[in-house]
Image 1 (cartoon, helix red, strand yellow):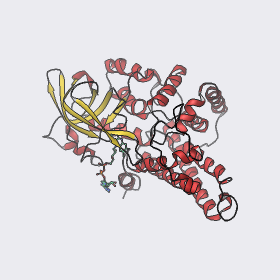
Image 2 (cartoon, protein in one colour):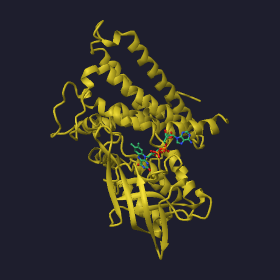
Image 3 (spheres, rainbow, N blue to C red):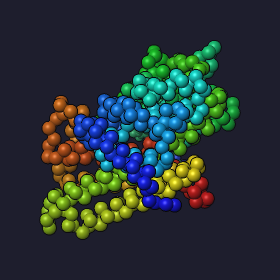
Image 4 (cartoon, protein in one colour):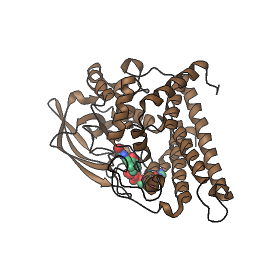
Length: 402
Ligand SMILES: Cc1cc2nc3c(=O)[nH]c(=O)nc-3n(C[C@H](O)[C@H](O)[C@H](O)COP(=O)(O)OP(=O)(O)OC[C@H]3O[C@@H](n4cnc5c(N)ncnc54)[C@H](O)[C@@H]3O)c2cc1C
C-alpha cells in the first residue's frame, strides 16, 4: 500500500483547504466546539450541509450519478481530515450517510428522483427507526408490525433511542411484515413520514440533560407502498448494508487526533499542582502518548480500509474494528480532558445552546463548560451503532475466524 499522497491528491487537499478557509464561518466552528451532545443540532449542522451542497460536496459517499462527488477513497479521507482540522461541524449521518446510500443502491428510479434531491438540499431531515424496546443488539427480533392495506402499509409498534426524531420529517424503519418465516426473512425496510397523526415522539433525556434521543410510537401510522425500499421481506439485507456504512463509513482518526493535539496544548498551561504544568507530569504524558499511539494506529487501519475500497472491495467486518477502536479512544480522550481540567470540569450547565448570542457565560474556560457534558454523552458511543460486545463478536467470528 502506498501511503504517500499523489500530486493530484495534494492539489485536491489545497482546494479543500482554500474552500474551508473561505466558506466555513467561525459561528459554525464555535457551535460545533461548544456542543456537548453527540450530534450537532440542525441549526449548525444544516447550515454547513447547505454550504457543502452549494459546492457539490455534501454527499461524498454517494455514486456520482446520484449526486456524489466522484472522489477516490483517498480524496474522501483528505476531505474528512481537513474538515476535522478546520473544526467543521460533523453533519448528521442519518440522511446522507445512512438512508441516502440505501436509496442509491436499492431504490427505484422514482424513489431516487423523489428522495435524493431533497436529501442533498437538506429539505428532508431523517431519523433511524431500527432499535426497539427489547430489540437492540438482537435487531432481527424486532416487533413493530406493518400490514398492507390497499396501497398503504399500516404500522403499529414503537422504536426507541431514535436520534433527532424530534427534528425529523421522515423516519426509515425496519418493520415486521411476516411472522411465519425465519425472523430475518420477515423484515421490510419502509420510509415513513413523521408528520401524521399516528406518529408520536416522546423525548428521552441523557445523563447530561441533553435531548438527542426519543421514543417513537406508531399507532395505525401509514405510509404508501411506494415508500418501501426493496421487496417485502428483503429488509434484513438492506439493514446490514446500512449498518456497515454506519460503523465504518467515517474516519474517526482525524477528529480524535485533533482532540489529542488540543489536550497536549492545554497540558502546557494547566498547573499540575506539584511540578509546573501538567505537561511535565510523567504519568499524564504517558497516558497522552498511549492514546495518541492508539489513534495513529487507528488512522493506519482506516487508510488500509481505504486502500481496499480503492480496489473496489467492500470494507466488510473491518468496519467493526474501526467502530470499536474509534469509540473507545474517544472515551479515553473525554476522560483525559476531565483529568486535565481538574475541579474546573466539575460543572454541568443545563442551558442550551452553549453557543451563540444567548449562551451563558462559561465558568472558567469554554472547554471546562462542555467537558463534563461531552464525557457523559459520549458514554453512549460504545453502545449506539452496535455495542462493543457486539463488535467484538463480529470481529471474533468474521475477522479472526474463531
Ligand atoms: C445515544 C444513542 C443514540 C442512538 N440512536 C439510535 C437511532 O437513531 N436509531 C436506532 O435505531 N437506534 C439508536 N440507538 C440504539 C442503539 O443502536 C442500541 O442501544 C444498541 O444497539 C444496543 O441495544 P440495546 O440498547 O437494546 O441493548 P441490549 O442489546 O439489550 O444490550 C445490553 C447489553 O448486553 C450486551 N449484549 C447484547 N447482546 C450480546 C451478545 N450477543 N454478546 C455479548 N454481549 C451482548 C450489550 O453489549 C450491552 O452491554 C441509539 C443508542 C444510543 C445510546
